[in-house]
Image 1 (cartoon, rainbow, N blue to C red):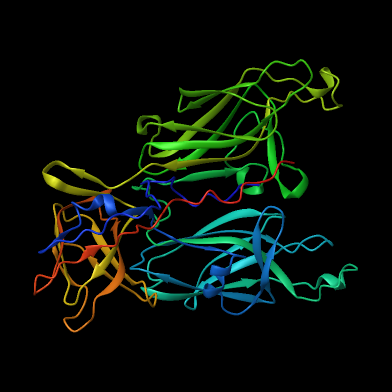
Image 2 (image 1 turned 180 degrees about the horizontal axis):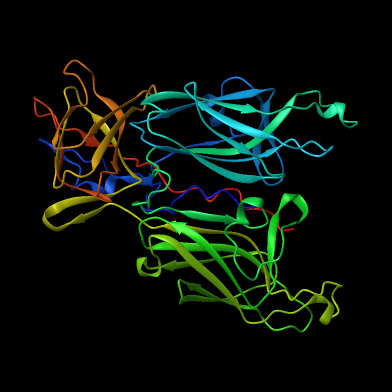
Length: 462
């Protein structure tokens, strides 16, 4: 089973150690202070089963549950509600990992998604844990808090079908759900660096696998996987704008007494990029690849192994298939970070949130100058004391009043997010300063937040 990888790899290393607070008179230059920023993907994620997730949950949920591999929450009855805050959303991609209450010849479960009373998709669910994505068109979600209703085709009481004492009306269990507020319009090429993943052994992976693969298999503890049954197996993945990326996979070679060490050559779009020697048992392998290895749209990944042998031929079983290795999951995560270019201009890639922790004085104004006018800049201000969020969207150079003259100084998180334009795949800023009428300078908070993509709960070995 694929450990949910929420998007991008760690983009900027931010330490947990305290950083001296910077104080100065006059404007605060955020471009000069880029090293004080943390970087993360531009999306909202809810990790069900954790204490923090309860703030997002409305009606129709059971108590937090857990298993050896994951935390989760059961949806109850006919529907469940999620409340999610979004800043200036466009098309919103909703991705969730879930499994229906199954067994006992129960089938045909679906999830219908209704945001703010607007239905935008119905998804049939596969047995077991799988990942699903549906894109809500612009206007379905709005700025601020949104409600998402998850409506189910049916629910069932375990005690009606077994000797269980569980009398809850169970529908679907959810592990995680994420909201990408700037998703690509279906049918159009993606102009952002975008992650991709494959959860081998699930129904969702079938369309991605080409040649050299065995069928769907499951091991203990719900781990799904697929065997490579030839020396070379191929799969196809859709990616956005080519970017330096990490490719990671979890594999277990077919090993037998006195057998040779298995090797794996990674070939992307016809070019060999990495070679690994595989250890016995389940292990993770990662390679960092240049942007030139990828292309926008469809990409072909070939896994070429040193040998493939049938268990029956070496006396370890009756399986006559030639086995090279079993694959659990694969992810491709772009490595994208804001950079300072010529003339001290700040380059922001689409889909990336750059956040500063600040002590913001009264009467603070953000001044923004854009080099190009083809992308928009979303500015989000979060009050760290009460959690309230305000946001603005600029499609040209301008000013934003961040605090009123009579508002006391406060600690805030100021986030900058580049959103897509008609042609641009990034945003270039020549000025990004915060000023006050009396010259009282804002300052960076000494302890920076540690922000990196979650590795998820990696699956256990079958």
